[in-house]
Length: 85
Image 1 (cartoon, rainbow, N blue to C red):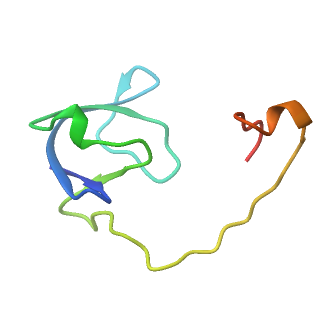
Image 2: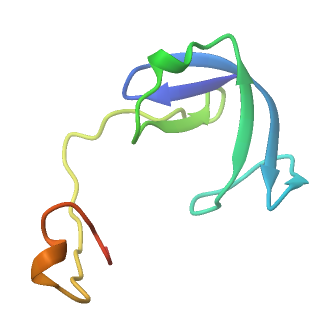
């Protein structure tokens, strides 16, 4: 089972793939795709985090510290685009 946070949406994970190859599990920082069922697409939003229900599921943080690096700023790109985070 997979838990999506912050919405606390539960779904069944059918498969996990990394670079078109099936994998048993993924870790922090891995870019993966996975197939889930028993969840409506409208229940998920951009930015949700997925985690294993049995192994420390994702939860909301009270606070966090972030380091932001601005690589290049172009006046015309400040409106809608992000070139580097």
